[in-house]
Image 1: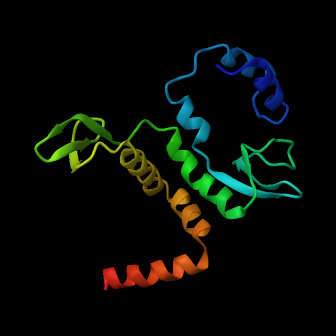
Image 2 (image 1 turned 90 degrees about the horizontal axis):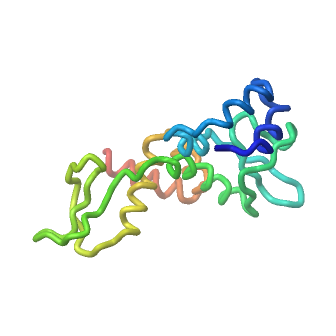
Length: 165
């Protein structure tokens, strides 16, 4: 549940009336609230003397909003904009705690087996979830590619052309 300060703060720049936001803010948030809060799309604005601010669509420094995050470099801000939408989702993969004959099973939340890992590697599962989030949101994938820069894109383009030729 959002605090009344949050609702009051944003209501002056919101299409919904302060009284409506107050009433709806008193209810429990739906299960999807976490995902909605970080879904984006996100954009990066230069903040003179501060770095690069990360804002949700419709928010900006000019409209009086504080950035969700501030980074010293634009590529780091773009990377955050790319990965944030995936952070609000339920995990896309899970690692079975018991080792089987092929290793530790990697499954989707509904139990579909997608692979095995020789080690109990929770970092791999987190990284798979992050990658899954990037693949599901074209804008996130585009942000990741933009953050990579020209040299990495040129090298990746050569590799990709070789793979699909």
